[in-house]
Amino acid sequence: MKATRALAGVTGLALMGVGASLLLDVREFTGVLVWLGGAVVLHDGLIAPLVLLVGLVLVRGGGRGGVRGPVRGALMVAGALTLVALPVLLRPGPRANSSVLPLDYSRNWLLAMVAVAAVTALVVAGRRVRRGLRGPS
Image (cartoon, rainbow, N blue to C red; front, top):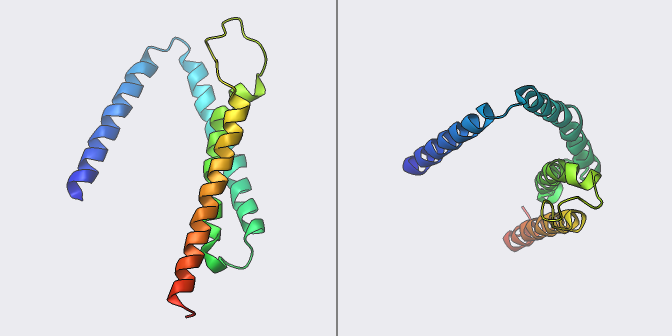
C-alpha cells in the first residue's frame, strides 16, 4: 500500500513538472492565469454550491438508503465534465479546419451525462440490494 502511494505521488509530481515546463513555454502567461483564476471562481462560486444544493434538494432526509453520497458524487462528476466541455459546447458551428474538433461534442457530452446517471443508479441499486440482503437493522 505504501509503495503504491509513493508511486502515485512520484508520478503526480513528475506530471506536475511536465505541466509546469509546458506552462513556461506559453507566450500568453497572463491569459493562462486568468483562465485558471476564472476556473477557481466558477467552481467555488457556482458549481460546488449548486451541486450541494441540488444534492440536498434531490435527496432530502439525511441520506436514507445511501443515496446522498452517490448523487452528490454524480453531480460533481457531471459538473466537472460540463465545465471541461463548455468551451466547445458554447461554440458550435463550422470551423475553418474540420480536423480541429471533428467530434460531435454535444452528443458525446450528453452520452457522458447518461453514463454518469446510469452508474449512479447502479451504485444506489447495489447499495439497496446489499442493505436488503443484510436485513433490517
